[in-house]
Image 1 (tube, helix red, strand yellow):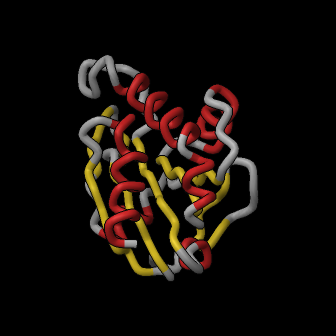
Image 2: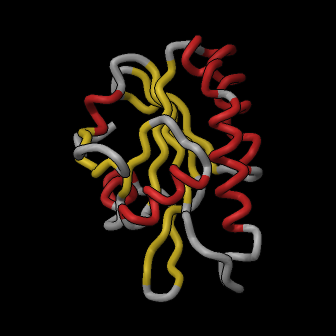
Length: 152
């Protein structure tokens, strides 16, 4: 992971490179509201993804894997998401999509603003070992855990 500092929703800025002494699963999500361009399911997919990672959190901890959610939302929007979805792991904000620029991650534009596409990165010791575009957000944690069992 590049040495990029992102603001935490409920914490100080964090250097991404310092987060992965072992395994860290980073999931990036849009955080948009439902519009014709994003589809009515965008907020529902965000919710499903948060809940799925939360439901598998104990398994990630058992396997020594940290969890980090990242979106291009504002700090206020990201804080509200953590409250609404009872998220109790690190959530970071990247409204400038600095990480997307550094890694060439997919984004989209809506209402004169860029948003993250739903991507999951699995890093070990600062190196990205696996990346996936989420097709079904709720399945992402199980895919990460399966990959770790086979390759970790």
